Image (cartoon, rainbow, N blue to C red):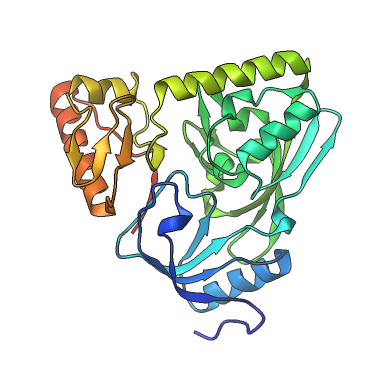
Length: 290
């Protein structure tokens, strides 16, 4: 494949340390475009070469195969994709901005609503793609419009009415997300800080953050998946170095050198047992790159 010379394409790039799970093989090709023009060139080159295209954010909701990924992995990490502009109650934010950075900026301007995102180690792009949320709140609730690049390299602006947000999913996954416009509300700085601290304390109390993980592994059916897994006796169970958390049964922890094979095997055992005991089919919340 003859990639454009100006692009810094890295063949055989290791992805393990680009994910919060610390699991996975190598990308066939990897690139961090410096701006939208370079991203456009990458998209067109990948399409012309018939290479599958993968977009990597913070890698916080992802399990990468031990065998790696065939295709081009793009990571939006340059300053071009990390801009935040705030005007009154409207926030324009780039897809590579971390959720920590977004919540901090909102708090500094006394804008409330996003406190529930505190402690989630993701990016705005990932939060949009999967409609990230917890405790009855979702990122999509605050979206007014999203700027995307399609598979032909064309940039479009999608209004909220053109986007489908569901439980841990959205119609944005077929695009490369560039930025979004959020509508927040003015609040009291002290109240926002109190809410933020409360959400963070609850997250530390209920979730196991001591080992590499990818957050909740399964989507919740009518009852929390973690409760179902716990009732099936899986807390502390393991396959290799992949362990079900003792604190939150919907978390699988990498306690050493866990492989994607270990995680997938443990997931399959959990699904089979929950299906047998409760007649429910658990669906993965994490993305799985094979």
